[in-house]
Image (cartoon, rainbow, N blue to C red; front, side, top):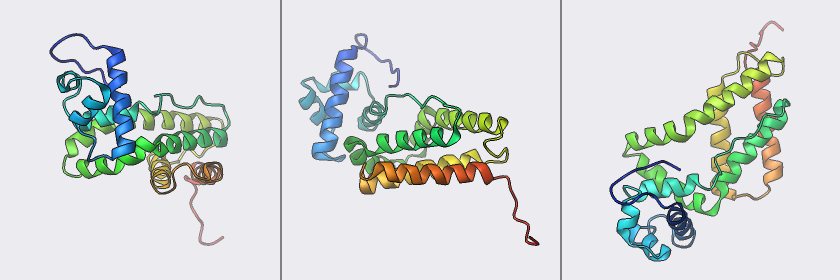
Length: 202
């Protein structure tokens, strides 16, 4: 969660959690458009000013509510690249397949289309640290001969994010084990062959 500060009394973690839970519930039951600050306040049993002291508006509140779903913990490396990529795939799918996330993501993406600065802040908050962690994972695997040193980690991340996001939005968590296994195998193929060049004479 972002450490926002503003006027008024100090942050109350219990109230924060209460508002975030109400936001998640509304996203599932009413959808993104109907999840307004006023509706969240009614559901959480607080006044709107309590929410505005903590979040500047609906988009920021929804972002925090969605980020609260993933727990903020990346998989601990095991030393086995395929197992690690499988854990990453499962993490991404589980986060995006949460009912509140499935409801919020299309609405957020639509708003980001007209507000690139907000989207950039979101990337800096969540995506860049995740990319860096994935890069460290692949670099470590390459140092032990289990990944190709020429692997394009940014492309690997885009593949991972895109595949899991589309799957989550269209199928939720259905048949997750088989899907995650297929994606992990594909990611492993990219990570272990990215630096090779095909010789047309062979």
